[in-house]
Structure formats: C-alpha cells, structure tokens
Length: 311
Ligand code: NAD
Ligand code: UDP
Image (cartoon, rainbow, N blue to C red; front, side, top):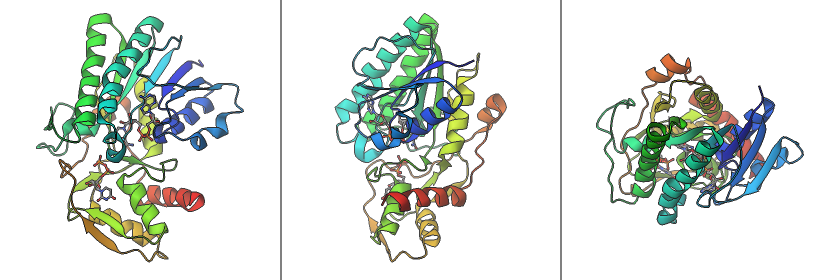
C-alpha cells in the first residue's frame, strides 16, 4: 500500500536517500527542509516526479498536514554545524519535535525519530547496548545536540505513554556516503575531500579514538524496517559494529586514493570528543532481522567516486 510520507530534513544527506527509497516504493513524499545544511542538488532529481513535493519550512513552526508517516531527520548532524547556533539546535530538538509529535497525534501518523549514538556520550559501556543510559556532559559544547536528542527521545516516549502516539526511535551510529555536504565537517567526508584536493588530512587528537562507520544504504534499510514495525518502538541501535581508529580511517582513505599527495597532520582534540563508539546490534537483529552488510572499503569506494564527481 502506498502512503503519504513526510520526511523532515529531506534535503540533507540521509533524508535525500530516504526520499529516493520511499519514492521508488511508489509512495507520495513530502520533503520538508529549512536548508541549513540541506542542499537542493540532493533532491533536484525528484522535482519532475509527481509524487514528490518540497516544502521549505522550519520545524520550529507549527505545521498542518495530513500524512500517514513522519520521519524526523531535521537537525544538523555535524558537530561543526550543530555548534554554529547551539540555541537553535536545542530548539529544533525540543520545539521542533513537539510540533511533529502534535502533527502525528492529529494525523494518527506513525513518527520515527532519528536519534543518535551521541545519547551514550563518552561511554563507559562498550559496545553500547540500548539499555545503557550513557555518560553525557550536560554543559559542554556538544550538549546542545546530545542533550537535545536525549530530550527528543523523552518527548517521543511521553507522547506514546500519554497520548498513544505511534513512535519509533532509531539510534544512528556514524553514517557516511554520497550526498554528504562537501563542507559537512564530519570525518569521512573531510578525509576524502582533503585527500582528493591534496590537502593535509586533519586528525584531531592522536587518532586513537574509535568510531564504527555505517554505509548509508544499510541505514536506509534499517530505518524503513523499523517504520514497518507495529508493536516494537525502540530505541534500537542502527550501525555497523566494525570498529576503526580514526588513524586507521585516514590510512584507509589514502590507500584508496593512491594518487593523493596529502599528508596526515594532527590537530587538538575537540572538547568532550567520545573516545570510543561501537553499537551492539543484537536488538536490531532480533526485532528487525537487520544487520549492516556493507563494509568500510566498499562504502568508501562509492563515497570517493561521488566526491570525485562533484569536486
Ligand atoms: P544533514 O545535516 O545532512 O541533514 C539534516 C537536514 O535537516 C538538513 O537538510 C538541514 O537543512 C535540515 N534541518 C536542520 N534543522 C532544521 C529545522 N529546524 N527545520 C527543518 N529542517 C532542518 O545530516 P544527516 O547526516 O543527514 O542527519 C540527518 C538526521 O540523522 C539528523 O537528525 C541527525 O541528528 C541524525 N543522525 C545522523 C547521523 C550520521 O552519522 N549521519 C548519526 C546520528 C544521527
Ligand atoms: N575527526 C578528525 N578529523 C576531522 C573530523 C573529525 O579527526 O577532520 C574526528 C573527531 O574528532 C571524532 C571522529 O573523527 O573523534 C568522528 O568525528 P565526526 O565529527 O565525524 O563525528 P562524531 O564525533 O559526532 O562521531
């Protein structure tokens, strides 16, 4: 059955891939974005599709629509961008999600919240399970995002318990791929763009901190499987559990771009930068029959090909 689906943040990196998948399945898609970090180029290819509609809008404002499903991806995701206007980041994750939960309540729509591994902060539990409550600094420079996403989860659960709204929460671990903004500031796009431009590769700290990188196609399949659930509301981790140090990532990028003349340089580690991160995905396996399939080298090759084209 085709549905009318609202994708907030639909012109961003993940949102544009999600719009594509939902359109390919024959759904009507309303893409809503304020274009803070979103790009028209990511969604231009849908403009001739009669099932696609774009609304330039900010989720801080109340919206009146009737839809079947809502994916809330609206929020800058790169530390560089969410720290640019931290008060705005908090407003997006509080006032914004309240507006969307109200819309879900009124429409009788399901709503999926794109939460994050940042809710675990700089974790003491490794790998991170959904049952871990996290170690988050409430007053640091990352708090606008981390605490914002935590309170957004709280609001989802409160709308579920208080009003019976059909919520779903996915906790997304570091995801990368084509359609990332060239100046996004996150590590995978930074390293690839630097290597392609023969600029220095900037490792923050000594590069021993770890992340687990998920390719976009795996995430989209996990998110749509989660939306299709009836009883299960999450939160559920969606990530690739293979863990790499940031130094290993830099070396891998250079290995895959052998023509690059870039050198690795070291820069100070930003405040509260988590030292390690790796999802435990047993819950996603059990409830969704899902696991990440695309390994780093394969995903990096596709992402490098994308950036080669646009640079
Ligand atoms: P992105 O910055 O490319 O996309 C975010 C989109 O939201 C942009 O198009 C931006 O313009 C839009 N936006 C921001 N604030 C808005 C507002 N107030 N109203 C309307 N639109 C707004 O980032 P992304 O990587 O595509 O992330 C999408 C979502 O997934 C975010 O909510 C992010 O927190 C979450 N997430 C992403 C990752 C990841 O690794 N990519 C990890 C964890 C969580
Ligand atoms: N990082 C880095 N160089 C960069 C960008 C990021 O070494 O040019 C590091 C950053 O300090 C962090 C890791 O890479 O330890 C992942 O950073 P990103 O901003 O991609 O995501 P997050 O910290 O939110 O996981």
